[in-house]
Length: 524
Ligand SMILES: Cc1cc2nc3c(=O)[nH]c(=O)nc-3n(C[C@H](O)[C@H](O)[C@H](O)COP(=O)(O)OP(=O)(O)OC[C@H]3O[C@@H](n4cnc5c(N)ncnc54)[C@H](O)[C@@H]3O)c2cc1C
Ligand code: SF4
Ligand code: SF4
Image (cartoon, rainbow, N blue to C red; front, side):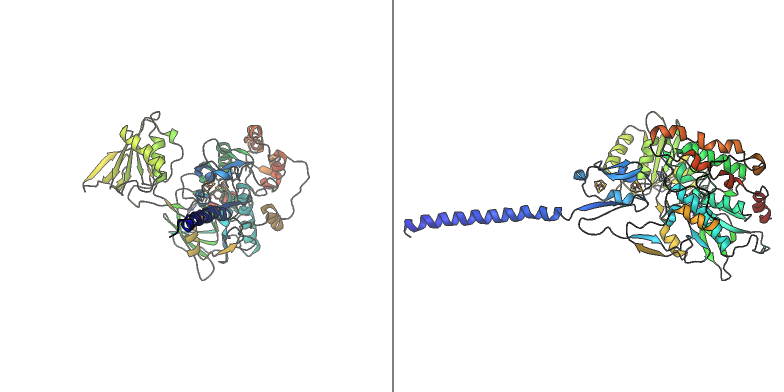
């Protein structure tokens, strides 16, 4: 071919290739721009955010921070879209969704205005009902008791069944968090027999297990506490101590370490409640179970002893001890690591039936390898607990032989079952609501039932004859002062004014001293 033609042809070819490359490059550059418009973004419902910090702590790139006790997206550019924050949020306050679309709907229990489920007489209160926060839970405890009375419950209406194995009460309260305790105090005030069944070894276990030093913020600040249990800004330890003083004075009937397993509505409208320790018959049931679910059990002999715990609260309480941790997930590994620090000098044994820690985070796997290497932790893979003695555990080891190992404490951290399935089996349905859905203020709900409470009166401290020995009123009245209010004021800007709490004291304390005896009397 004539070189005069070939030259321009080659040049044209080059130009063509160059254009093609540019088009491809442009196209490949366009793709990230398109997908950027589709990245996941956060939606946070402040009304449901409890400030529990779970999302903040789980985020690997520190995108989130708590501001005024609510989670906020501070460094979105650093977000790697892992969605862990949404997965750990216990209240579905935080969800993630594609930018440009709507946040996904949330599943909430199908309840009427008074938190009664579709099963008449079965109430779901507090955080489990999709209305988190301590003050809301306290208000709802009172509202449910008042509503029960309005809808036909009569004190002592259940005839004794003549069965020594069956306890008959007006109300069975499941859970001793703020909702359950408040419901129990309202039952006492209204001379209803009741029992509080609590699976844990102490009351208000969700709050008691907040991280060390955590303040309980008495939110929402525009809602008043009109339940009978006081709520104010306070370090969690102080609030729990104050509550325990009140509970002791009132003499609440609380059965600790008793797990409610089954609730069935009978054809006559009463409820048969089965626990791991006994049977109850009630006119109404109030489920105040929070959202932490039921920790799974090993179901081996000796597991009910105080030495065996379903959670680790405070590793600093153990030092120089031989301790067993059962489980192979992140919570078991993290608990073992926190117990096995050189400062605490514990010997920690992990019993895990799997062959390796396949499910744990890389960071934890590294730390556990180090602790094993330093002989702070011994891991028994492929082992199974057979039973617990008072100071030992019997385990079947991987090679099949059994061994008795002396221990001074054990933590069974094998996960938990969220309560949704359990509640559904009981007949409590769930419905979809928009992510921004909020239930109305809880103080107004109570006031709809007991009448409007004075809003602007000067607070009156209770007089002693009103109390008639029911409360140590001086101690009780001082709670709001001492209850961390002063200390809390230094750290937080929004406070519940002491007067706002005291405002309701006289009304709260007008409880018949005979009432506290009613529950016990009816049991016999
Ligand atoms: C880390 C953290 C920080 C928080 N900070 C705040 C705050 O500052 N201010 C605030 O207002 N809220 C805060 N919250 C939220 C608040 O603690 C909850 O909304 C509140 O405790 C809910 O009360 P409740 O009575 O509904 O349930 P819970 O307090 O969760 O109590 C439920 C009880 O039921 C028991 N139970 C469960 N199942 C059974 C069963 N089958 N049988 C027997 N007993 C059972 C449990 O052991 C538990 O004691 C925080 C939550 C967390 C996790
Ligand atoms: S998606 Fe992952 S990286 Fe982004 S904020 Fe949530 S936890 Fe952090
Ligand atoms: S996990 Fe949920 S409830 Fe807890 S701070 Fe984050 S958004 Fe709020």
